[in-house]
Length: 112
Length: 119
Image (tube, rainbow over all chains, first blue to last red; front, side):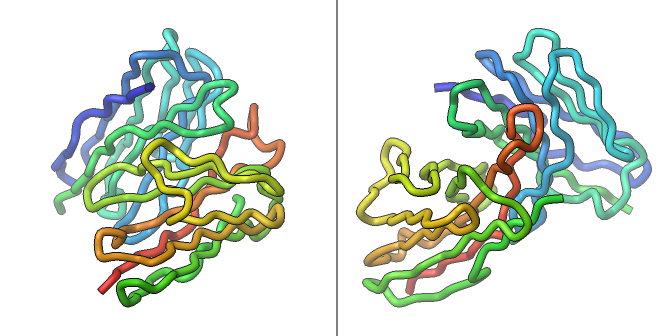
């Protein structure tokens, strides 16, 4: 089945620094989604990408849908303490009954 | 944004009993709902896909007789863990896809999750 490789697995950064994480796939996705999950909570949608090459921003977050349709990255600028959490990428293909394939997650820790 | 409410958020039950978890889309109609299981520090693992008015589709390795899913309306899906055992203890999360939202209605919105502990 499809697999998503998400990296890095974890990150420790200083408050104010920029962060970048990415996902790569062995096969093509038609939609890429980025979620954030806080401990004991469900994932919250951050950004949705629908077209290859698309670059979308949501506040301090920017994500891009790779041209090859096999990758996506998420950047967080000027990190703040509330950015702490686990970030997941998720991909979807046509005809997959809208099922999402999730990356393994990136645990982000922001140090004051 | 679309809101998905999951209840209960935490439940402790005795081994051998059954537990029902509800997933409701509060302000939209969900054509499809999904149920996931998540182990500590791991990603979400899809258990089953639920379409309103039809039988759920279970992923390989998920026992349909143990994890009963009912999707009686466009706003409610339930997951019942039958004859629960300690190894069923986990974090269960539902998600719902908004009919017509997004390019392909792809955006999935998640419930808050349910922490199940079987003792």
